[in-house]
Image (cartoon, rainbow, N blue to C red; front, side, top):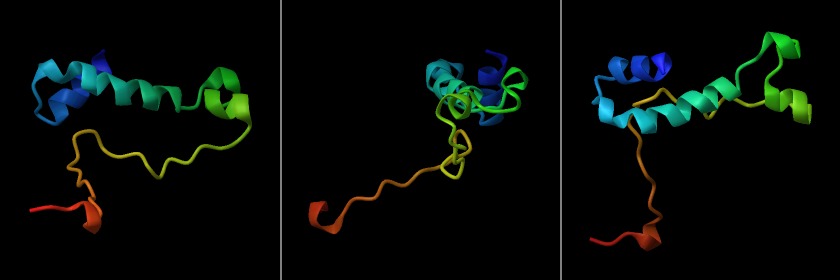
Length: 74
């Protein structure tokens, strides 16, 4: 919970968003290497494939949703 509170405080968000902040926190913790697994992530130890982290974003960063031209209306 300390990590969730720190993320919310860092982005100056209200504490009522703690549930939304806990999802990315648990995701990152589950994708982090563990000493007991020989510095591998749990998923890497299970599957044997190194994870890609290029899709990770900073919590609270602005996003833009792409709508294809054929689905756009005024």
